[in-house]
Length: 277
Image 1: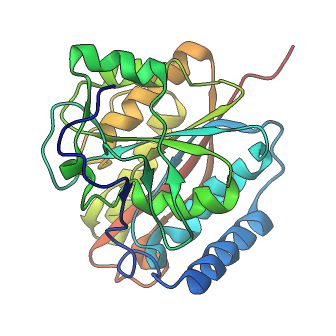
Image 2 (image 1 turned 180 degrees about the horizontal axis):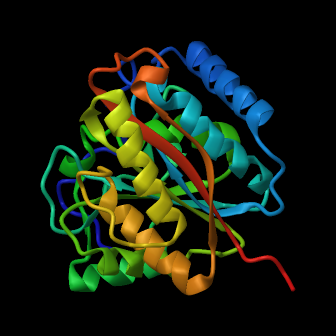
């Protein structure tokens, strides 16, 4: 993919360090390790490593423990996975495409993560499905908050960071299909669930959404998940490949430090390859 002429810096700086997660490296590392340790203690034994994950992306004080449930499942992939295809919704800038940051790396307080543009993604630029848009990534948190977990769990992996704008889910699935189930790639969808409902109503809505995800029904709406397009794309591709979704855990912001009157819902879901006959 040709680089745009306005590419002036090689590394995207963190935008939400100190806001969504600690900016001080030692504290951030300790927090991530602590959340992963808690997730390991709560996890059931999994028969196979995941091919894909759905992970929440709020501030760590709200959704970090739920996110850790998903990332802890990826620890079994260390030394095998060299690439994470990471998709999340573009919250701040409009784009009718899947946007790459246009930089060679994305920085974090724990160090940079190398940005990779595989040939399969580069090929999608010819139809304008994939574009290089540093402005879309500049203040976006949905991908950035996953990077400290990625660096801790899969420190040798590069990232293919795709901020997903107004694109049909079946088109987004085109970007996922070449990588889903590959021995060297993990697909991660970054998404929260319902937003700003009372606790009881949020749990009812989120439970129904999760049941449809577990049934591979690619009809999740933006009111039910901010990353609905990314989730639906993963569900389409996962269904084609026979991957089985597995619920790892759910929570709302009121389960950590939020108030029950107006909560955000979170879910961690792994997609496993079918068991060998």
